[in-house]
Image (cartoon, rainbow, N blue to C red; front, side, top):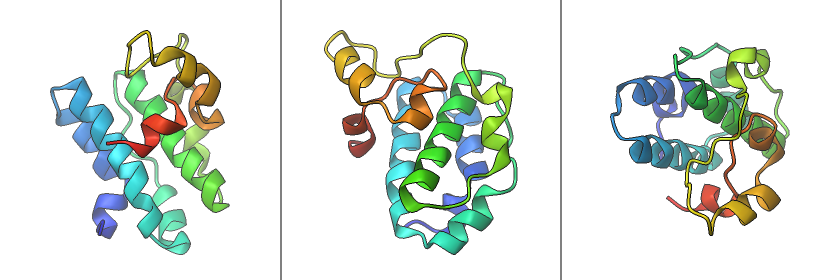
Length: 129
């Protein structure tokens, strides 16, 4: 069970700053997204409102904002305004799992909240850690 402090986007943002491996960062973000299903809606709305520390590498901002927006859409929660910050969008597509076999499904199945930011992860990627 995820704790309230672990469900806080700021906690994930701090991990994304400190972790060295991009693969570990992506896996942690996907795992975080998955575990938010266990957190009640009221707590999520409260935790999502403060702006987490934004990263110098905009890929991680886009991933975090996209995951938060996706959870809000799935759970029908009020989406925090910080997810619309321009620093949470990429100028080019980013493929966290950049293998040729993954690209077609990521293009076809990427949740809108991620796709519009340029983060190409399929729904299947979000279900696997």
